[in-house]
Length: 188
Image (cartoon, rainbow, N blue to C red; front, side):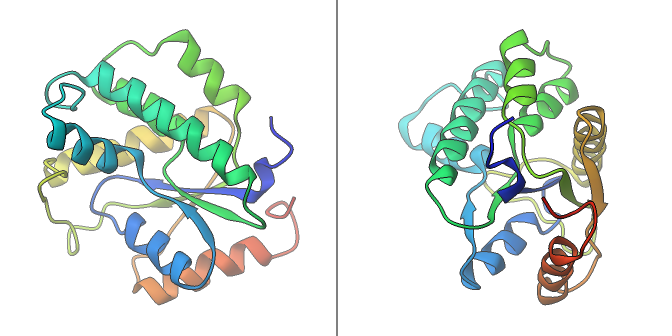
């Protein structure tokens, strides 16, 4: 576990549940953040005609996500204070399990070695805001299955899961910041 893990807060869940919107709101308030690996990789691979896309080569896509997430952690160490992550290394494991693909040993090692804050915020499926787009091709049912895979994966790695309320982004933002500021097991 890195000495900085207590500063690295993950927001996870299924697609279309408001994770990225929350991360963007945290960034507007001045908090350091990382962007989601999956969406960026899909955009890059599509732009260059690359094969590492979830609908072409899920294993190659997962390897690129792992590389992205490891780089995001290195960059986060250079930031001061709390850094919010739009997904983390365990999401790659959850993705592979969801796709019924083997999880390579080096990915399991990465998830154990490179830890995040003990508290992980989970955005639940939210049909009222879910909408597919160019990078998000999943159905609502697939989004719910992704949420479940992430809950199982992070829980299995010993993280404390906190469900985000289905509320406007300003309320979600306040909820996260209040939970992190509360005394007790949520503080490092």
